Image 1 (cartoon, rainbow, N blue to C red):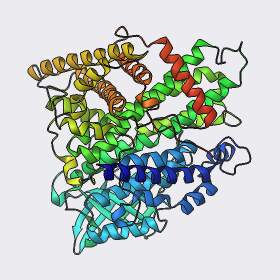
Image 2 (cartoon, rainbow, N blue to C red):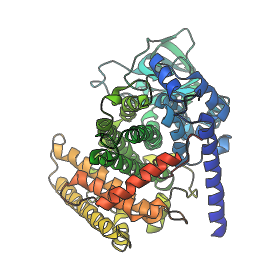
Image 3 (cartoon, helix red, strand yellow):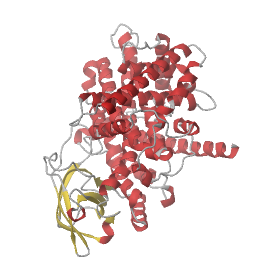
Length: 579
């Protein structure tokens, strides 16, 4: 046991040192003399391209190694660590996080999931050598695809012929390798197949005009048109016709990690608002003496903690609960964009007209406000993720039935525990045997009732309210199963998906409070944040159920200001930033 703990501490220390190096190299975002400071990122955003100095820094850091499994020479072994490292990049510029990093990772995940040994080796060498990738995931079935944004691969001697177009790809002109999903009619009417291709450059591959976006302006979004492009047999990824299954293997990984990375962008929005409030005199409506300002800051910090708890469970769940990770990751991709977008809107009320500033001390706020909504888009976006949750509810009439042993729960919630098995792609598409996250709730509620200290009563009350919401959800799901309509889904089903996502977030917060604190205690061991987080979640389900303790709000406000003064992140890790 001691050996395992020591190894975990050693590994965690290595992770912290790696993040500290990246933070140090990126420097202080608010330092006007920093060539990677806010003014330079804002100027690059205005010119609608990535900051070249930042790309060179990430080259030197070897960021692509974060996307390559350790057994292939990279640094990737835990998805929660991957998200933590990328938050440092997203904190400065979401376009950089997506354009330099996440876009390559979205494509590489498919190769790791079902590529053969040679494809995996070549992809690893490409990324470790500084190359870039992009992925064209499957589009909706015909009838919903009004842009005719579809690729078709037909069999020819020695391989396939690729035709069609993909309207929007990040970095299409700059990538060295492409992963594409194309309709393969010979394999079935709706069958898709994945292919690994070299980057565009052939005469039969045309770049389409750039598409401008309101957010992530630095990302160069272009389309590709294929006209009889030949793909050899070595370009086939997995089995012909197996593209849909392969995409489903990738989605739990991408849905959980992408939104978790984007918490860095939300962190900057909160940090900018704290700076604004600090700069205003006592009589100003935006000062820290204003109840509205104090409430907005505390609510935003609480929302960030809630989102990080859920992200932690989802990223670790891919390792620990692969058969349940499809639902867990869908909850993250569904809930986080909504919560974070609402959070930024509430903070914009504090900044007033400064929330529209495109330069100066508070210009980063409007950039974050434009960039954050983009994390809910894509083929595995918010709407598709809600569909996954609905499928889970229709399949499991009793959400919260145990799917694992209680011993597994602690590993799911510990932020610094590195003892995780490797990801098993084949299990990511298997039917879930239960719902371990919600099954952990009864024990966590009992722990909350037994808590001690000033905020113990508030925590127990909020935990009881969450347990009541789970009981009501189970009753409604049982009624739905008994009276399921023969036609389409009723609006009640969509409301159940919303409720399920919030209850799952509450269970994640309670689990992190119960299991996640380190030996030195710290914020995660404090019932105050957990009571505030649960009150915030339950309030979205039933405004009359509980009230957040006023002393708890003051407690968290002090933490917000301390982290601002000490330059530490507003997530579960309180990471030193910009030093």
